[in-house]
Length: 219
Image 1 (cartoon, rainbow, N blue to C red):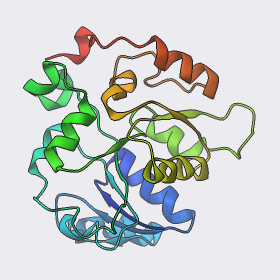
Image 2: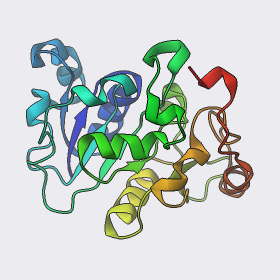
Image 3: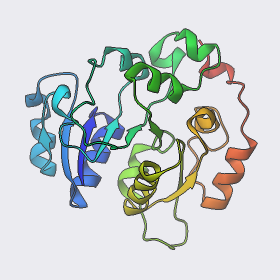
């Protein structure tokens, strides 16, 4: 697939490495000049581009930036993607640690619903709860013992299936996290967040989640 990645931090950079190694054509951008990603491009074979160009021709787009930076994305930043291309977002809201107060999220809007509203496009939430080093190194073949499960939240349909297939290709078990409105089940502070659970345990953890955000993840 042709994949555009906006954000080259721990998760965005790791996905650039993994997806390029799997043979996907990756275009990666950060908030600065593409030349700042020259080392990553040389290492992986990905193409470093401006953020406004990352989605051009993409079969799938990944947004992996600090939550507070989402409103800074240019209007129409996804317009170059192919029709129907799913948009993954990997973000988390860390009000005390990084992002400051985002009123709508504090009032109860799920993080990923807020992201979708900001960019004017449906999104699919995944990769937000796994440590980047495990994303880089812990993928295993399908059916392998100890394979880590990753929740995938978003509207059903071909786009979500594409994301399921991508997660599997990376070496993880995709589990259905429900519609985007229930993506709070995998936000920071929930039972599944940051845990390397198998598929059955991940589904149990999603079911046990509470919509009440823990104090450490509130402004």
